Amino acid sequence: MLTRATLLVLSLSLAACGRGETCVREQPGVMLSFDDFDWTWEAHLPLLAEHAARVTFYPKGEWLRDPAETAARLLPLAEGGHAFGVHTIEHERAAREWLLHEERWLEDDVLVAKATLERVLERPVRSFAYPRGEHTSLTDRAIFPHFDHLRGFREEHRSYWDGQLRQTPRFFFSTSIDTRWERDEAYFEEHLDALAATRCEVWPITSHGIDDDRWGITPERLAWLLGAIRARGLAFYVPDDFLDPGPLEP
Image 1: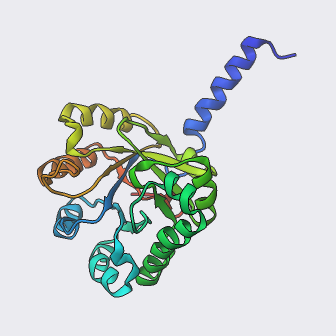
Image 2: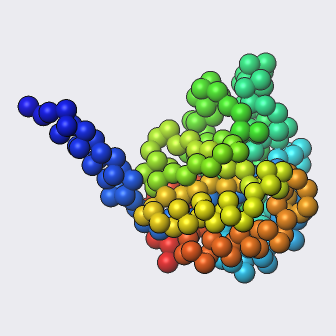
């Protein structure tokens, strides 16, 4: 018969195994994304390329109903090797919209955007980011059949080990790195150092425009942050990296 102490040791061992031994991608890293839409994204593609940064763009806007306009805005980003997810068209609060409109909201605000993106990009779009990060179990249940990953949004730090991003249901929160939170370099250094000391943890982080707006990150701060990520040997991941093993990051 197993004693309580033995069970405790066993549970701790399993937890340690879950945080390390089940890794498929064993390089820790960040999952950087930008929400809404801003022309500064395209303007700063050279900065992202300079640091070999792969990011995920989650665009929103009425123009997502028009494949031609969508292509004009997003294809330059796609040519840079970046990923895309759905962030709705209207950017309304999902919980309220689901209660008021149910399937109409799902069809007209979520799936239309998905269809346009897939038509323009000519590939599946498999991740969804909630506007303002607001969601409920009802909205999750409605959206999960159409996407592999759902993403929330929060102020606080939260990282995930490789296995958590592969297990279904695949839901994760992304930490806001917008200027409005007044993060200093010490904040990022602390969390990046802790991340680099892990075997396979991933820190999802999100901003909006690459500019001086409070709901964005300045080009200078972004350049510093990308350099700090690379200096620690951390990888840049996108959600699709946690669906199929594929080739590991170099």
